[in-house]
Length: 492
Image (cartoon, rainbow, N blue to C red; front, side):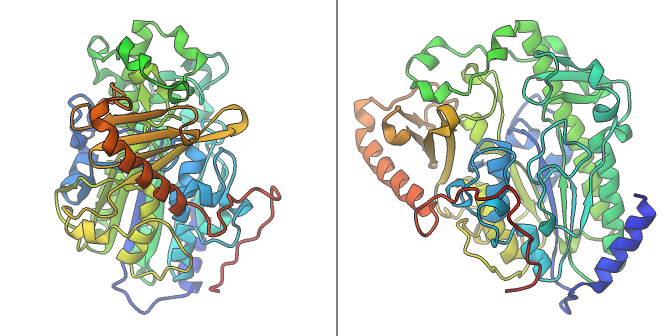
């Protein structure tokens, strides 16, 4: 379909929708990366170059301890976009959507639509199989959006035969990478940045309705593909090789590292360096595209009436704890970058209190004066955006499945000082890390006598947090039908 058609369609939707008289209502520019940990400059990483995210952090609040609720794409994104924990969405696997379990619940962008907003999605917001779903709607929710754009660039349509992968024929589930000879504009994320520029220009030109524009970049998700210039900005010989200590493994319950993948046995030191270089290059390439979106907001005069959010769906292991990718409850997989900037938000400040992606739903609704239509479980972060020293709820809860078919669950409570984890209620083991002395979570002090009183308190707090994350009837929703729903786009 041509851009001319989209221009006509967008104009019609902007004019035909439920127009709000309050022109002061803020826009939302929601930017999310894929599989991105906190290795970026404004989070103190000395190596990874992210100048555009750094400048966003300089004009807003950076949450130093932000965490996903489930370190896997589909469950994390469903949780974030519903304001509910995974036990309440019923989504703990990929390729599932909350409409299959709680079909009447309003997604975050749908909530804004129901309040008269124009809602547009560019790229990946719900789960996509990467790279196979690139250029399609993936596992999207049609009720969330009025406009959906799905570019597919050279990384998907041309270069896949040239991509190196540890597992032949597999790109999305195994480390794979390629330094492309083509420039930014030919890659999927570059095309997405161009689409964002186009949409934001039209949003600014119209002015009849506020907008919720969501931009879902694919990088640095595998395959780590980026233009060659980004690879060349990182010297291969200087790339870190994480040689996790043997004693880091000796005190862990088996469930803690159950996410270890068979491909990891193929890694040599040289391959590790190449993989890290490719991940860093992909991150910097993605950051450059974020910069284009930020420039479009500014150049179209939207800065003073827009809330900008940047985050990722979960963190990512690059060899730490002898793990790669995700699906653990260590800091590296659960922690995500989270930056929020906009009118009324503190400038250049850092919030140290633990928060979760589940908190974005009520926070954005509050910031934009959009009434909540559903019960949500996240906390409203707006007081912390004005005064980042406030403690807020004071914890973040993450969970992940273990065993065949996800037979058991692990839960992890991140407090300002501690991370406390129970696998299957403690039956499969427990972990405690004291971040005051051990930011890398290398020493499990669960059996150390000096921590026993803290453990008793943390166990009680974890029990209460898990209880609060359940649906009202205490039963996790289950999928009844693969396509049970047509979204209701009218207010209840």
